[in-house]
Image (cartoon, rainbow, N blue to C red; front, side, top):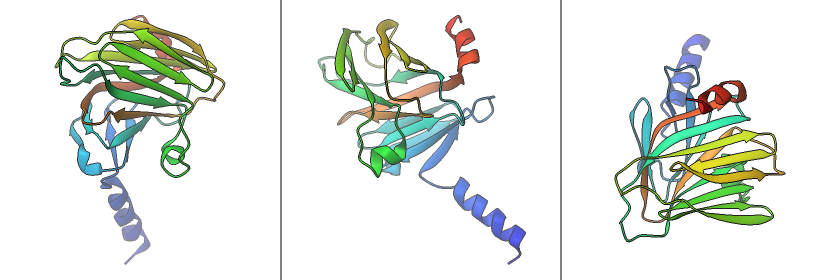
Length: 200
């Protein structure tokens, strides 16, 4: 087999990996998804959306973007009587740290039907941020600039936080036990674009 054919074969194998995918491919800021545990619990059925169910989790990144904004709609069919955590977002970490090193993410955001809780290395903040009725998408925005982290969930300002841990390219979506969430129109934009995005 020629060297060119071998390279093409390897590229094909990588692109067909059940553990990775791309969304927003036709935009200026395509996102790479890395599936952590149980790729059979992740369904990518649109160019701008995917569904992930427990116990799987998906780490997203836009190459070379660390400071900026993560913006997405989340859709889930939680029970109206359920007040437990629906989904968590893990930030300022990497899939390698989460899986191989077993290191807890420096920033964890746990979204329940009534509250959002942000876990930082030195504090825990809980804010009342009720979600809309089941089956209604809600928007999550995470703005990162150096040590500053600003969070909004379902149009509720969760807060602005000072975080010592450095930014990373990754943000991980982790459904809670028994939950399945659909991530719609996710974007990760660098700071200059993120500032304009905030005013939309």
